[in-house]
Image (tube, rainbow, N blue to C red; front, side):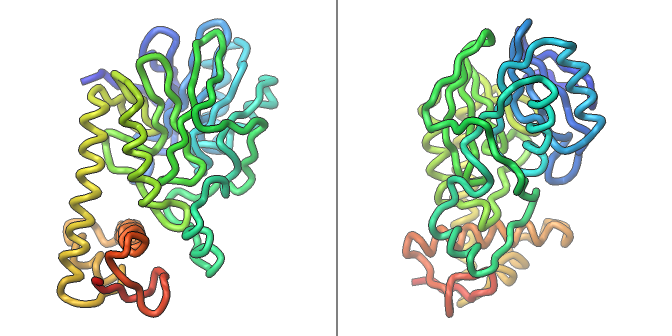
Length: 299
């Protein structure tokens, strides 16, 4: 296990040329808080500037300590990851790099659900986010701190990127060690998420650096667990539907008896994400149309 004992607002050295500053936004959705990574020595790059929080901005400026910031990379535009990007870029004369704005990478089925009125849930979208430079899947950006390769991993959010660096991958919210990633339609798409998990298998890495929580020292084992966890939940959903048609809310009440009721809305979004994936694969059908309030039954 990798030692990870950061204090909010203070740089924590993870390895040579890599430190993390923990944002003061701990919650059930963000664990200890958002990890903002500072990559490099004399010239640095920032990965995930974090939430719009004055204390965190001040902590980052202290940690940067007058060094040149060459790049600001954003894994995805949830409100706990991207809002400080623009201000930090202006203060330091840097540019922001990401896959696109908050609508970029959204799948066709999620676009349709959004157009019918389904709003996002969970961590909240940074609707004002616009990067200075668009990163394409597989694109490499090099600097004094080495080279980062963008890996498009939609699922948690359509514009989600992971960044491969040396023997590591910065996984944002796609793979974390303390919890499975939230997939909340129409922002999250489970079909994309599972494909992105398979895609990450091809990235050789000894460690994952997630957007929340400690580094993951057994990355491929964790990835296998994440895939198996989703397949297990899918099996539970299908087994529940064998008793007859049900709504996402009804399925949630059956499957999440061990989860506090306050977390049931997030759990219901997770169930709905599975139902959409199963609907797309022809395993279930929605009556009368695909929606969060629909009744689903096995085909």
